[in-house]
Length: 166
Image (cartoon, rainbow, N blue to C red; front, side, top):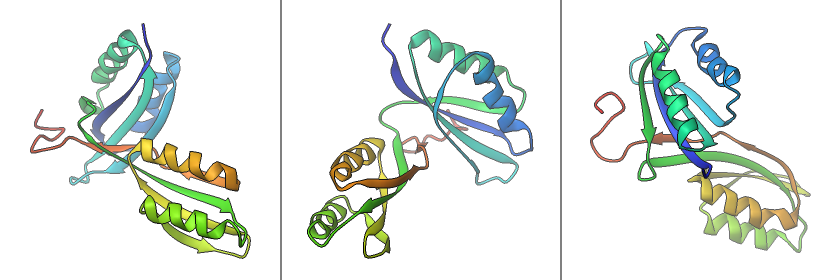
């Protein structure tokens, strides 16, 4: 069976210990999480957790079934490729007078933003889908990536469907 990336959205109680319960399930089953984002929803009693991971069809089924059994989890949804997925990345790259123009061209093409600048480095903010982040990283590697941080994926279904109405 082939491992694929999949994204799971959870609607959970906004209480201490819930994240530990959810991530503990992954630890007990030896599943690896690629990215995890958590934030309060439009209703402050609930939080939304978005988990990105890789696995085969069996792994996907096991994770979803186990998550549905958690009393603190109100809703579980497997998001498909048509969902809107975004990520934020901050990346610090080395520059010289000879490479500054090339880096700035890439920043413009990727609709990124320089958020800090010094004589030898610049920090760039990039938002978009994960493949855009990967492409920007690949483009910046020859210049010298000094530091990088990515938020992980946040995602919503397109159209009128919501996590709670599915």
